[in-house]
Image (cartoon, rainbow, N blue to C red; front, side):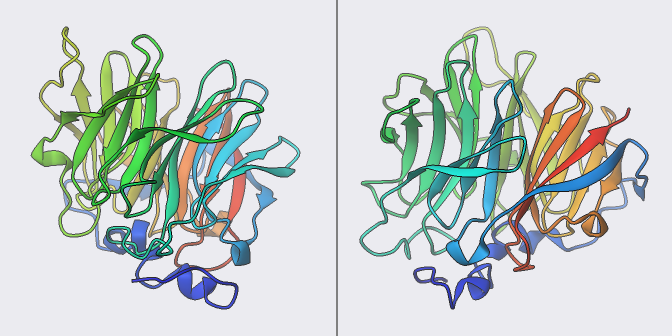
Length: 329
Protein backbone atom coordinates (compact mmCIF):
# COMPACT_ATOMS: atom_id res chain seq x y z
CA UNK A 1 0.00 0.00 0.00
CA UNK A 2 1.01 3.59 -0.42
CA UNK A 3 2.12 6.25 1.91
CA UNK A 4 1.81 9.95 1.12
CA UNK A 5 2.46 10.94 -2.47
CA UNK A 6 5.63 12.86 -3.14
CA UNK A 7 7.51 14.13 -6.15
CA UNK A 8 10.13 11.48 -5.91
CA UNK A 9 7.73 8.64 -5.24
CA UNK A 10 4.92 9.60 -7.56
CA UNK A 11 5.77 7.38 -10.45
CA UNK A 12 6.00 4.68 -7.87
CA UNK A 13 2.71 6.08 -6.80
CA UNK A 14 1.19 5.78 -10.14
CA UNK A 15 1.75 3.00 -8.95
CA UNK A 16 2.49 -0.30 -7.93
CA UNK A 17 -0.39 -1.29 -5.73
CA UNK A 18 -2.55 1.75 -5.81
CA UNK A 19 -2.70 2.61 -9.31
CA UNK A 20 -3.24 -0.85 -10.30
CA UNK A 21 -6.36 0.47 -8.76
CA UNK A 22 -8.07 0.61 -11.97
CA UNK A 23 -5.85 -1.70 -13.87
CA UNK A 24 -4.81 -4.91 -12.18
CA UNK A 25 -8.00 -6.79 -12.84
CA UNK A 26 -7.82 -5.39 -16.29
CA UNK A 27 -5.20 -7.45 -17.96
CA UNK A 28 -6.67 -10.92 -18.37
CA UNK A 29 -8.10 -12.24 -21.63
CA UNK A 30 -11.72 -11.55 -22.49
CA UNK A 31 -14.18 -14.45 -22.06
CA UNK A 32 -15.07 -16.39 -25.15
CA UNK A 33 -18.59 -14.91 -24.98
CA UNK A 34 -17.23 -11.44 -25.77
CA UNK A 35 -16.60 -10.44 -29.35
CA UNK A 36 -13.68 -8.03 -29.30
CA UNK A 37 -12.12 -6.73 -32.50
CA UNK A 38 -10.27 -3.61 -33.55
CA UNK A 39 -12.11 -1.00 -35.59
CA UNK A 40 -11.17 2.67 -35.49
CA UNK A 41 -13.71 4.08 -37.95
CA UNK A 42 -16.47 5.09 -35.49
CA UNK A 43 -14.08 7.39 -33.55
CA UNK A 44 -11.49 9.49 -35.36
CA UNK A 45 -9.22 12.53 -35.12
CA UNK A 46 -7.91 11.75 -31.64
CA UNK A 47 -5.79 14.58 -30.22
CA UNK A 48 -4.43 15.51 -26.80
CA UNK A 49 -6.12 18.68 -25.54
CA UNK A 50 -4.35 18.98 -22.18
CA UNK A 51 -1.43 17.41 -20.36
CA UNK A 52 -1.41 17.18 -16.56
CA UNK A 53 1.42 17.21 -14.01
CA UNK A 54 2.07 13.71 -12.72
CA UNK A 55 4.56 14.97 -10.15
CA UNK A 56 1.75 16.97 -8.52
CA UNK A 57 -0.54 13.94 -8.36
CA UNK A 58 -2.79 15.29 -11.11
CA UNK A 59 -4.01 11.95 -12.36
CA UNK A 60 -7.52 12.66 -13.72
CA UNK A 61 -10.10 10.21 -12.46
CA UNK A 62 -13.54 11.46 -13.49
CA UNK A 63 -15.16 14.11 -15.68
CA UNK A 64 -18.31 16.22 -15.97
CA UNK A 65 -18.99 18.67 -18.82
CA UNK A 66 -20.68 22.06 -19.02
CA UNK A 67 -22.70 23.10 -22.10
CA UNK A 68 -19.78 25.14 -23.50
CA UNK A 69 -17.47 22.11 -23.44
CA UNK A 70 -15.57 23.05 -20.29
CA UNK A 71 -14.49 19.91 -18.43
CA UNK A 72 -14.61 19.56 -14.66
CA UNK A 73 -12.28 16.84 -13.45
CA UNK A 74 -11.12 15.20 -10.26
CA UNK A 75 -7.35 14.82 -9.85
CA UNK A 76 -7.21 11.62 -7.82
CA UNK A 77 -3.90 11.74 -5.96
CA UNK A 78 -3.80 15.54 -5.70
CA UNK A 79 -7.20 15.60 -3.92
CA UNK A 80 -8.25 18.38 -6.29
CA UNK A 81 -11.19 19.55 -8.40
CA UNK A 82 -10.17 21.35 -11.58
CA UNK A 83 -11.65 23.16 -14.57
CA UNK A 84 -10.20 22.51 -18.02
CA UNK A 85 -11.27 24.90 -20.79
CA UNK A 86 -11.83 23.82 -24.40
CA UNK A 87 -8.45 25.43 -25.13
CA UNK A 88 -6.77 23.12 -22.61
CA UNK A 89 -6.15 25.67 -19.84
CA UNK A 90 -6.39 24.15 -16.36
CA UNK A 91 -7.51 25.95 -13.19
CA UNK A 92 -7.67 24.34 -9.76
CA UNK A 93 -11.01 25.06 -8.11
CA UNK A 94 -10.48 23.30 -4.77
CA UNK A 95 -8.03 21.12 -2.87
CA UNK A 96 -9.56 18.87 -0.23
CA UNK A 97 -8.05 18.54 3.24
CA UNK A 98 -5.52 15.77 3.64
CA UNK A 99 -6.28 13.12 6.28
CA UNK A 100 -4.03 13.26 9.32
CA UNK A 101 -2.67 9.80 8.46
CA UNK A 102 -2.04 10.76 4.82
CA UNK A 103 -4.80 8.45 3.65
CA UNK A 104 -2.87 5.24 4.19
CA UNK A 105 -6.01 3.53 5.51
CA UNK A 106 -8.00 4.15 2.35
CA UNK A 107 -9.27 0.66 1.47
CA UNK A 108 -7.35 -1.26 -1.23
CA UNK A 109 -5.45 1.78 -2.52
CA UNK A 110 -3.72 3.25 0.53
CA UNK A 111 -3.94 6.91 -0.50
CA UNK A 112 -6.68 9.53 -0.26
CA UNK A 113 -8.30 10.27 -3.61
CA UNK A 114 -11.06 12.27 -5.25
CA UNK A 115 -13.17 10.13 -7.57
CA UNK A 116 -16.61 10.67 -9.18
CA UNK A 117 -17.95 14.09 -10.16
CA UNK A 118 -21.30 15.43 -11.39
CA UNK A 119 -22.41 18.94 -12.39
CA UNK A 120 -25.82 20.61 -12.27
CA UNK A 121 -27.12 23.26 -14.70
CA UNK A 122 -26.29 26.08 -12.24
CA UNK A 123 -22.64 25.05 -12.04
CA UNK A 124 -22.81 23.24 -8.70
CA UNK A 125 -20.34 20.38 -8.53
CA UNK A 126 -20.83 17.18 -6.53
CA UNK A 127 -17.86 14.87 -6.05
CA UNK A 128 -16.60 11.96 -3.97
CA UNK A 129 -13.65 11.72 -1.63
CA UNK A 130 -12.25 8.43 -0.28
CA UNK A 131 -9.81 8.70 2.63
CA UNK A 132 -10.23 5.74 4.97
CA UNK A 133 -11.35 8.20 7.66
CA UNK A 134 -14.81 8.87 9.10
CA UNK A 135 -14.32 12.63 9.11
CA UNK A 136 -13.63 13.11 5.39
CA UNK A 137 -14.92 10.17 3.34
CA UNK A 138 -18.15 10.92 1.52
CA UNK A 139 -20.09 13.12 -0.89
CA UNK A 140 -18.94 16.72 -1.23
CA UNK A 141 -20.44 19.80 -2.89
CA UNK A 142 -18.83 22.89 -4.41
CA UNK A 143 -21.05 25.79 -5.42
CA UNK A 144 -19.72 28.46 -7.83
CA UNK A 145 -17.53 30.86 -5.87
CA UNK A 146 -17.88 28.80 -2.70
CA UNK A 147 -15.81 26.36 -0.68
CA UNK A 148 -16.07 22.55 -0.78
CA UNK A 149 -18.29 21.06 1.91
CA UNK A 150 -19.10 17.47 2.77
CA UNK A 151 -22.86 16.94 2.61
CA UNK A 152 -23.07 13.19 3.23
CA UNK A 153 -20.72 10.91 5.14
CA UNK A 154 -19.94 7.50 3.70
CA UNK A 155 -18.30 4.54 5.47
CA UNK A 156 -14.54 4.88 5.87
CA UNK A 157 -14.09 1.19 5.03
CA UNK A 158 -15.61 1.70 1.58
CA UNK A 159 -14.37 3.28 -1.64
CA UNK A 160 -16.94 5.69 -3.14
CA UNK A 161 -16.15 5.80 -6.85
CA UNK A 162 -18.79 6.46 -9.54
CA UNK A 163 -21.31 9.29 -9.18
CA UNK A 164 -24.43 10.22 -11.15
CA UNK A 165 -27.32 12.62 -10.57
CA UNK A 166 -30.91 11.84 -11.53
CA UNK A 167 -32.25 15.34 -12.29
CA UNK A 168 -35.89 14.18 -12.14
CA UNK A 169 -35.74 13.06 -8.53
CA UNK A 170 -32.71 15.13 -7.45
CA UNK A 171 -31.11 11.92 -6.24
CA UNK A 172 -27.40 11.16 -6.41
CA UNK A 173 -26.29 7.55 -6.90
CA UNK A 174 -22.84 6.39 -5.80
CA UNK A 175 -20.97 3.16 -6.46
CA UNK A 176 -18.82 1.74 -3.68
CA UNK A 177 -16.13 -0.38 -5.31
CA UNK A 178 -15.06 -2.11 -2.09
CA UNK A 179 -18.44 -2.71 -0.47
CA UNK A 180 -20.04 -3.68 -3.80
CA UNK A 181 -23.02 -1.41 -3.31
CA UNK A 182 -24.81 1.54 -4.86
CA UNK A 183 -25.79 4.28 -2.43
CA UNK A 184 -28.48 6.91 -2.94
CA UNK A 185 -28.36 10.40 -1.39
CA UNK A 186 -30.67 13.41 -1.89
CA UNK A 187 -28.96 16.27 -3.74
CA UNK A 188 -29.49 18.34 -0.61
CA UNK A 189 -27.31 15.91 1.33
CA UNK A 190 -28.09 13.79 4.36
CA UNK A 191 -27.87 10.14 5.31
CA UNK A 192 -26.99 7.74 2.47
CA UNK A 193 -29.20 4.73 1.79
CA UNK A 194 -28.03 1.43 0.33
CA UNK A 195 -29.99 1.40 -2.91
CA UNK A 196 -28.61 -1.91 -4.18
CA UNK A 197 -26.25 -4.51 -2.81
CA UNK A 198 -26.86 -7.06 -5.56
CA UNK A 199 -24.13 -9.72 -5.89
CA UNK A 200 -23.38 -8.52 -9.42
CA UNK A 201 -21.92 -5.34 -7.88
CA UNK A 202 -19.45 -7.16 -5.64
CA UNK A 203 -15.73 -7.30 -6.29
CA UNK A 204 -13.88 -10.51 -7.07
CA UNK A 205 -11.01 -9.56 -4.79
CA UNK A 206 -10.04 -6.08 -5.95
CA UNK A 207 -12.67 -3.52 -7.05
CA UNK A 208 -16.28 -4.15 -8.00
CA UNK A 209 -18.96 -1.57 -8.93
CA UNK A 210 -17.22 1.33 -10.64
CA UNK A 211 -18.61 3.62 -13.37
CA UNK A 212 -22.18 4.88 -13.06
CA UNK A 213 -24.79 6.58 -15.27
CA UNK A 214 -28.56 7.26 -15.20
CA UNK A 215 -30.57 6.60 -18.37
CA UNK A 216 -34.25 6.10 -19.17
CA UNK A 217 -35.43 5.05 -15.74
CA UNK A 218 -32.45 2.85 -14.92
CA UNK A 219 -29.10 3.00 -13.16
CA UNK A 220 -26.25 1.62 -15.24
CA UNK A 221 -22.93 0.55 -13.71
CA UNK A 222 -19.74 -1.28 -14.55
CA UNK A 223 -17.94 -3.91 -12.48
CA UNK A 224 -14.16 -3.70 -12.90
CA UNK A 225 -13.30 -7.14 -11.51
CA UNK A 226 -16.07 -8.93 -13.40
CA UNK A 227 -15.61 -6.97 -16.67
CA UNK A 228 -19.34 -6.36 -16.94
CA UNK A 229 -21.83 -3.64 -17.83
CA UNK A 230 -24.99 -3.73 -15.71
CA UNK A 231 -28.45 -2.16 -15.93
CA UNK A 232 -30.67 -1.85 -12.85
CA UNK A 233 -34.22 -0.56 -13.39
CA UNK A 234 -35.54 2.04 -10.96
CA UNK A 235 -38.93 0.72 -9.86
CA UNK A 236 -42.03 2.85 -9.36
CA UNK A 237 -41.31 3.44 -5.67
CA UNK A 238 -37.66 4.27 -6.38
CA UNK A 239 -36.31 0.88 -5.32
CA UNK A 240 -33.77 -1.09 -7.31
CA UNK A 241 -35.07 -3.73 -9.70
CA UNK A 242 -33.33 -6.92 -10.80
CA UNK A 243 -29.84 -6.51 -12.23
CA UNK A 244 -29.49 -7.12 -15.96
CA UNK A 245 -26.04 -7.95 -17.37
CA UNK A 246 -25.82 -6.06 -20.66
CA UNK A 247 -22.21 -6.80 -21.68
CA UNK A 248 -19.36 -9.08 -20.58
CA UNK A 249 -15.69 -9.38 -21.42
CA UNK A 250 -14.97 -5.66 -20.93
CA UNK A 251 -11.58 -6.31 -19.42
CA UNK A 252 -10.52 -3.45 -17.14
CA UNK A 253 -13.77 -1.53 -17.61
CA UNK A 254 -13.94 1.72 -15.68
CA UNK A 255 -16.23 4.55 -16.81
CA UNK A 256 -18.62 4.81 -19.78
CA UNK A 257 -20.90 7.22 -21.66
CA UNK A 258 -23.92 6.79 -23.90
CA UNK A 259 -23.35 7.85 -27.51
CA UNK A 260 -26.93 8.95 -28.16
CA UNK A 261 -27.64 5.91 -30.34
CA UNK A 262 -30.01 4.00 -28.08
CA UNK A 263 -28.08 2.05 -25.45
CA UNK A 264 -24.82 2.07 -27.37
CA UNK A 265 -21.94 3.19 -25.14
CA UNK A 266 -18.27 4.09 -25.19
CA UNK A 267 -16.34 2.54 -22.29
CA UNK A 268 -12.84 3.11 -20.95
CA UNK A 269 -10.79 -0.06 -20.42
CA UNK A 270 -8.17 1.06 -17.96
CA UNK A 271 -5.52 -1.66 -17.88
CA UNK A 272 -5.51 -2.42 -21.63
CA UNK A 273 -5.44 1.32 -22.40
CA UNK A 274 -8.43 1.25 -24.73
CA UNK A 275 -11.84 2.78 -25.40
CA UNK A 276 -14.45 0.27 -26.56
CA UNK A 277 -17.64 0.90 -28.49
CA UNK A 278 -20.27 -1.40 -26.94
CA UNK A 279 -23.42 -2.19 -28.89
CA UNK A 280 -26.82 -2.78 -27.23
CA UNK A 281 -26.36 -6.53 -27.81
CA UNK A 282 -23.12 -6.49 -25.80
CA UNK A 283 -20.71 -6.89 -28.71
CA UNK A 284 -17.80 -4.47 -28.55
CA UNK A 285 -14.95 -3.17 -30.66
CA UNK A 286 -11.83 -1.18 -29.81
CA UNK A 287 -12.01 2.37 -31.18
CA UNK A 288 -9.10 4.08 -29.35
CA UNK A 289 -5.91 2.61 -27.93
CA UNK A 290 -2.47 3.41 -26.56
CA UNK A 291 -1.32 4.27 -30.08
CA UNK A 292 -3.69 7.25 -29.91
CA UNK A 293 -2.14 8.43 -26.64
CA UNK A 294 -4.28 6.69 -24.02
CA UNK A 295 -2.54 6.14 -20.67
CA UNK A 296 -4.82 4.08 -18.39
CA UNK A 297 -8.07 5.79 -19.47
CA UNK A 298 -10.34 6.37 -16.49
CA UNK A 299 -13.33 8.41 -17.63
CA UNK A 300 -15.25 9.42 -20.74
CA UNK A 301 -17.94 11.94 -21.66
CA UNK A 302 -19.57 13.31 -24.81
CA UNK A 303 -20.71 16.78 -25.82
CA UNK A 304 -22.39 16.55 -29.21
CA UNK A 305 -20.06 14.46 -31.37
CA UNK A 306 -16.96 15.32 -29.36
CA UNK A 307 -15.58 12.56 -27.15
CA UNK A 308 -13.63 13.51 -24.02
CA UNK A 309 -11.34 10.84 -22.53
CA UNK A 310 -9.28 11.22 -19.37
CA UNK A 311 -6.10 9.18 -18.89
CA UNK A 312 -4.65 8.95 -15.38
CA UNK A 313 -1.36 7.14 -16.20
CA UNK A 314 -1.79 5.13 -13.01
CA UNK A 315 0.50 2.30 -14.09
CA UNK A 316 2.13 3.73 -17.21
CA UNK A 317 3.39 6.68 -15.10
CA UNK A 318 3.58 8.72 -18.31
CA UNK A 319 1.56 11.71 -19.54
CA UNK A 320 -1.80 11.89 -17.75
CA UNK A 321 -3.97 13.78 -20.21
CA UNK A 322 -7.31 14.83 -21.67
CA UNK A 323 -7.91 13.49 -25.15
CA UNK A 324 -10.57 14.70 -27.58
CA UNK A 325 -11.87 12.71 -30.54
CA UNK A 326 -14.75 12.81 -33.00
CA UNK A 327 -17.64 10.33 -32.88
CA UNK A 328 -18.61 9.43 -36.45
CA UNK A 329 -21.27 6.77 -36.08
